[in-house]
Length: 235
Image (spheres, rainbow, N blue to C red):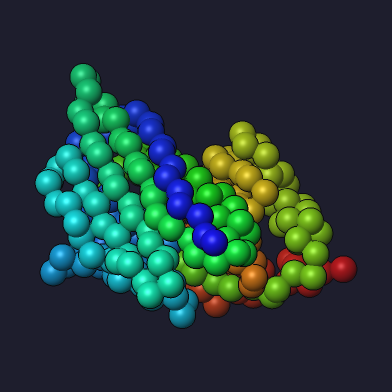
């Protein structure tokens, strides 16, 4: 069976066309809002996120207005493409449109599609937050994998208790810093502080993941793995 999909996202941000292009079409820019470490060179986009290390081919390169890359067609029909369209507005604002499309094979596509949809919503929310508050700056990506929760509702309750909230707009405290929840859905949570964007994600058939973007500070992957373990295993 399988499922073809296409999703659209759009936002106006107070950043220049050039700043938006740097965010979506360069390795350091993508590092600052997506996930893992990224490189854009020789017509390819390469990502390293734990053991997940996909490579996409750049299929549209029209700086600073149009960028597209896709995974290529796998033997089972799997395919994912990301397209970014950038349009300048008056007074330095920019409209960013993103189209995510592809095909998920198999009869069990529904769970993967849900996880992808909820995850992509976080990524777009993080990109918009980056362009509204940190445009032009480069973040250091932090990736840490915690334990696999036995019950996800309990796991999210522990995360929320540890930071003091979890709904969009909540004022919370993360790693000793005051922040605000900029995004929340059943699989993800994003918090913005003055120096970082902290994110927690439900791994697909896996652990709770910390996928942070740190502009200033001494955060390490080891310290966040310890934080996740202590928080989720607390009685």
